[in-house]
Length: 136
Picture 1 (cartoon, one colour):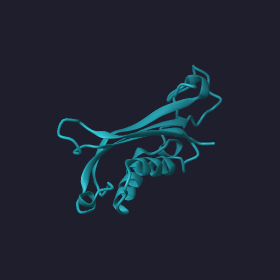
Picture 2 (cartoon, helix red, strand yellow):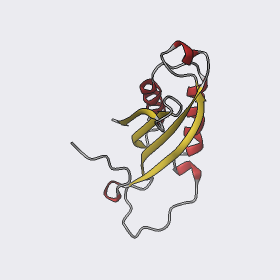
Picture 3 (cartoon, one colour):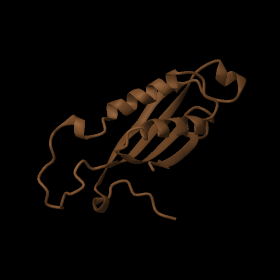
Picture 4 (cartoon, one colour):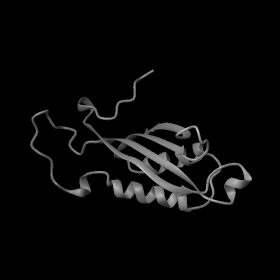
């Protein structure tokens, strides 16, 4: 099985990430989980196609222009909107929806999303799932 590689000079990719975004989500299958929100921690890792596929290793410094990169604020806003949209039963569903939202940008080659519920067990830091998806 091919190893997941986020940043790869041979493929002209960069690694962008969002770490430890903690939000209150209405998530879970049990009745008590429908009545209140609970904390979830979200981590998103993206492999993004470089804007200059023809670069050499000694290429000049890239343009300092937001339009040429994936904006992490856009990803965070989409994440908050998905959580605010309503109750989700499974962390797997939330992770899949987040991955799909990220892959709407064709520059994103691969996404890895980890969703953790932080307050399920007193003797565990978290429980959750991690999914990895690729753009075709």
